[in-house]
Length: 285
Ligand code: FAD
Image 1 (cartoon, protein in one colour):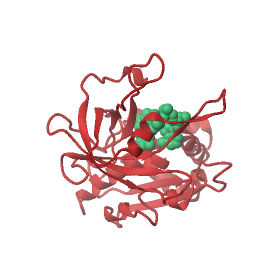
Image 2: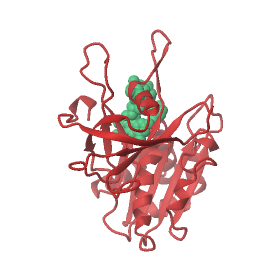
Image 3: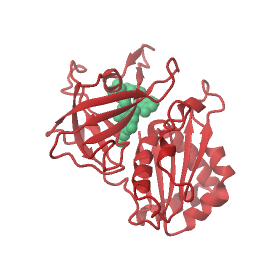
C-alpha cells in the first residue's frame, strides 16, 4: 500500500515522555527508543501494527504533509501503562542520487530531535496482517534486522507478560551492523532480556562481516548454521513465520530459506502455502 493511501483524516496529539539512545553516543548510526503518551480515548493498537507520524512543515514542493510509518515496539498493554506506546527510530538521511548530496530525513530527524513534553501528531494505527499467533501453543520464528526488531520486541513483551504460559517455541534471528547496534540487546540496553523466559525463547544474533562495504548482517549464514531447527519449525503446522525490517535483510532470509528448501522455486511454493494458511507475514520497508 502506498503512503498516499493511508487514512490520516483523524490525527491524534501524543506527548513525548522520553527519548533514549539505543546505540552508543558517537556511533555511526543513531537509533532511539521513544515513549509517547497517547490521547486518553480512541487510540487502541495491537502488537505488530504501525503508527503514522506527521512532522510539521515546510514540506517538499507540492506535498501537503510528510507521513512516515513506525512499528509499535511496546505490547498492546502499553510501554509503562495502557496509555503509552513506544517506537524504535533510526535517524535516517536521504541520498540524492543526482547531486550526491545527503539530506536529513524529515520524520526520523524530527522524532530523534524531539524533547520530552513535545506534542507529536500521530495517525493510525495501521496494519493488522502482522499479528500474534492465535494461541499460546504456537511456535514463532521471527527474522529481522536493524529497526525490524521493533515489532518483535512488542511480540516478546506480550508473550512474556503472559509469563510461563507460552508453550510454543519462540526463536528470534536478528542481525545488525555491529554488536552495539543489536538494538535492545547491546551493552547499553539489555531491555529484551527482561521479558523472555529462557525455556521457550532463544535469540540468535548476526553482525555484518564488513560493516562499511556491506552493512547487511550475515543473517543467511546464521540461519544456515541453525537450519535443522528452522526447517523443522517451518514444516510444523503450528509455526508462524515473521520477517521484518529493511528489504536488504529480507534478501538474505530468502536466500537461506531457498537453500534449506532445495531451490528458490521450492521455497516460493512453501512460502505461498504458509501465506495461504496465514502463517507467513512480512513487514518490510
Ligand atoms: P526520508 O526523507 O523518507 O528518507 C530516508 C532514507 O532512509 C530513504 O532513503 C530510506 O530508504 C532510508 N531508510 C528508511 N528507513 C530506514 C531504516 N529504518 N534504516 C535505514 N535506512 C532507512 N523506521 C524506523 O526507524 N523504525 C521503525 O520501526 C520503522 N517501521 C516502519 C514500518 C513500516 C510499515 C514502514 C513502511 C516503514 C517503517 N520505518 C521505520 C521507516 C520510516 O517510515 C521512514 O521511512 C524512515 O524513518 C525515514 O523517514 P524520513 O522522513 O526521516 O526520511
